[in-house]
Image (cartoon, rainbow, N blue to C red; front, side, top):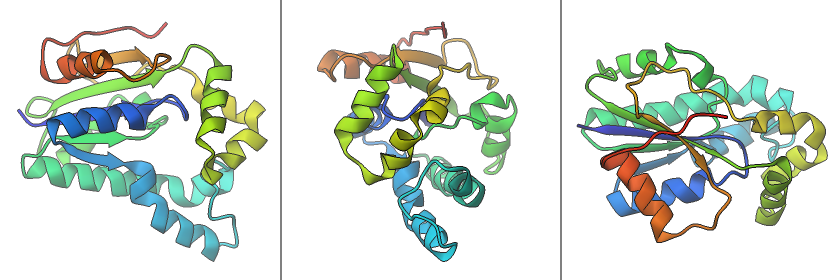
Length: 202
């Protein structure tokens, strides 16, 4: 069965690193919302007289956020429609709170969780200081707003319940505080393609 694999969670948790490792091993389509939406976001922000490197302010979210998710999901759905597994990366903060969001998205290609195997990896870290260190270490200009407004931004890092209507064993809450290893990649691969395992938020 074709697979749609989400890597969700807060900034700095390591979603992209894990997703790239899995997609590379399984030759699945890799769809990173940051990469897919960046050209459009930069153009829209410049046109509005705003900082093109901003990815977190209320102004950015009002102007660009939903477009980024639409671009990403359109690409994912196109891949699923031709039978290619899709690995999707993004916070999906609002989307995972809506129990019906996933079914509406799959319905765009006449699909459903009954004929697409959906897996969700919620990547998280044990404390906010580790998030901050990792964000600082990647030295991206796209993170400057986060660091300048840390007290308000850090609330977005909270571990959240994924409320989509999925079968048991479809959601993995993954503590990514350890360095990437073959064992970690194998664990993710088993979850998506093999026996599977499930953690609960807590």
